[in-house]
Amino acid sequence: MSLLAIVEKKVHNAFKTCGYDKAPALTGLSDRPDISDYQSNGALQLAKKEKKNPREIAARIADVLKTDSFFSSVSVDGPGFINMRLSDAALIQSFCLFKKGKNGYQRSTKAQRIVIDYGGPNVAKALHVGHLRPAVIGEAIKRIHQYADDFIVGDIHLGDWGLPIGLLIAEIQERYPDLPFFSKNYHADKAVVPFTEKDLEEMYPIASQKSKNDEAYLARAKENTRLLQNGHRGYRALWRQILKLSVREIKKNYQKLDVHFDLWLGESSVNNRLQKMIKRLKKQGILKSDNGAEVIKLGTSVTTKNKLPPLIMVKSDGAVMYGATDLATIEARMEDYQPSRILYVVDARQALHFEQVFSAARKLKLVPKTELLHLGFGTITGPDNKPFKTRDGGVMTLERLLNEAVQASMKKVEQSKNAAKLSAQKKEVIARKIAVSAVKYTDLMNERMRNYVFDIEKMTALEGKTAPYILYGLVRMKSVLSKMPKAAVFKGCQMVLTEPAERALFMRLYQMPEFFQTAYQNEAPHVICDYLYKLIQDFNVFYHDCPIRGAKEPSIRFTRFLLTATAYRIAFDMARIIGLEIPEIM
Ligand code: ARG
Image (cartoon, rainbow, N blue to C red):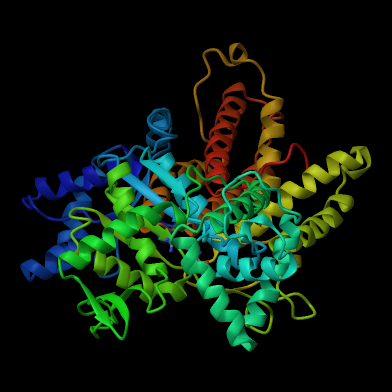
């Protein structure tokens, strides 16, 4: 139980004492910390229902609460809000709450089984700025669920099976026509390829461009795709080589971001299942022919109320479509994991696609009790509000973006007061951690659906709502704790509160379960970013106002060390949820 839950119960009981058994306690964190810690607007709602004066009801409830020494003050404000301030004794006596669950957070509902689909890069294309958000947001959402003790499996869902592969094969064939993969009687699987993953990354955009100007080239790429999907031996072998090279490169990139997938499946993983599904749906009459394509007809959209366009399963040229693989993937995930939810962290511009897929999945009864949820996100833009590019208008690769962030962070590290005593290698490690954290924090602190401007200087600044500000706070906490005396020194000490800043920090620590719960319920990492920022701010005021080691009175020193230790534990956990990397020193 959190501190808020305890207060809520007390308010509920007060309503009962006044004869209102079923009145909602409606208690939350106060938005007026200057006058109260918690606030209830239960009286307002009750008065509406009972057609009574809200202030009168609130006053009666407040009178009951005033008799409880848990509160140092209870007042009725505005139209009938009940404002409560906890006594210092209540804060101290509730310290044991931090020992329950995870720093005081305990889930109240049954653990869920979840599959989360995020990342979604396409094979043989360099990862670029567009891949940052799904990776960072998906990883944070996964870690939020892990912290809440849900069972969650993350799948990268590689784009490894569509036209891009057909295009690559076309380009490879032009450049290396003599490779054995292209010979009619190919049967060995040992052929080595003469190109690297970097070559593939260079080839793909060229192939894509050619296909736009050259119809015959495009037709060849489509035919390659169809043959690959239908089991052409040589193409399959070539595809396996492409996949191997590309996945190695993709892994390196995600490693740098400290993003980890449990499953490295892709669109190709469901090919066999999909072929069976198509046959079955044909037999059942669910698959309809539409201008040569095979489609599933759908009902109306829940959001727009318009009729949804049919989901195309197989195109007229025989190629299976993106939606079809997604549908078969749902079937596979249901069999493998029986999830109660499947989450998709994918660009908001794919909203219609997911609505179609989800609607089809329900029509096929693939998900009787499973919630399918598309968690979209907005775009990272340049100062011109257009999708973020390099200065000369090219695609900003993830690698380049991270390197630029490391350079900006390095400048800050060089300026720090510790710079002189750090080796070049140490500085590099610190700069990397700061850079990755800065990029992630900026991405996550912006609400998922919002677009935001990519500004390296701003995100690596030491002041303001930034990762460096937070990391600096964490490093400071750690340094305080490294000087904490052994427990025996504090034998017999009791906690005491003497300064407002101690109290403010204490209250903030007690709020973690509520902030976390909001983040959890709404799949909203930005709520954790907010909380963490506020926590560090409160800690910094505390650090400034309250000498810790220098406190004369042992109980005061004891209290301040305990507060710092608890603050560090909570801040560390929250920082790790959103993927920040904490340097040794800054
Ligand atoms: N590869 C896709 C793309 O680049 C994203 C995949 C998202 N996941 C999914 N199950 N459709 O657009």
